[in-house]
Every structure is written in structure tokens, then in C-alpha cells.
Length: 147
Image (tube, rainbow, N blue to C red; front, side, top):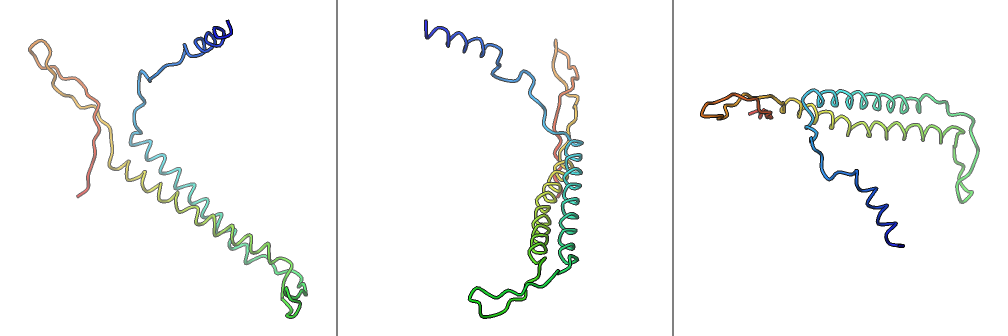
């Protein structure tokens, strides 16, 4: 009895699941690749602009008051300012976001090239039916190779 209840629950839960799709989803057509490329490029430009703004802001922030500290050994005076760490963080964040936009630019270019090379079309092909040829549409992929 202890084994029958878990087995029945497992059987009930697995009954509505299916092993495969009955209609497989088609690949991305040309328009989808172009739209994806435009979105990626727009995101890359925004990230690049934001990184540039952060980097330039690090130069605009004033130094602030000078803190008269000495080095670790207490021998040499160090010219530290109040806003040095803020400036460093802004500069590094700007550089990091500018470098982060590079993969989006390359992905955008790849998707644009895929859209230019790949397209889908229904070709009319002759197929025999009752000793005559009937033209029926067959979905096909067109791949353009630039020479």
C-alpha cells in the first residue's frame, strides 16, 4: 500500500506531459535577426554612452579637502584628497561598462550578417500525383554566400 500511493501520484503527474513537440518551432527568420541586431546595438550604444559619462564625471568631481595623512610607515606625507576614492570608483565603473559594450556590438554584427545571409521562402516544386505533376509549396532556406 505504501508503494501504490506514490506510484499513483507519479502516474497522475506524468500523464499530461508530452515527449516531443508536435509542431517544432521554426528558426529565426530574417526580420527577427534584424530586430534582434537593432536591439543589441541600441543597448550597446546606451551602455557605451553611460560608461563614457561615468568616466568623464570622474574628472569633473572636485578633489575636495586635503587630508594630511602619512604613509604606512609614518615617514612620508601623502597628498590624499577627500574625493579620491569616489573619483576612482566612477572611473573604473565607466571603463568597465565601456568594455562591457563590446560583446553587444559584436553580437549585433553577427545577427545582422545572419539576417543578410539567411532567408526563408516557399518554393513551388513539382510532385507526382496520379501520373501528373502537381506544384506544391515546400518551405526552403535560402543561404547567400558572398564571393
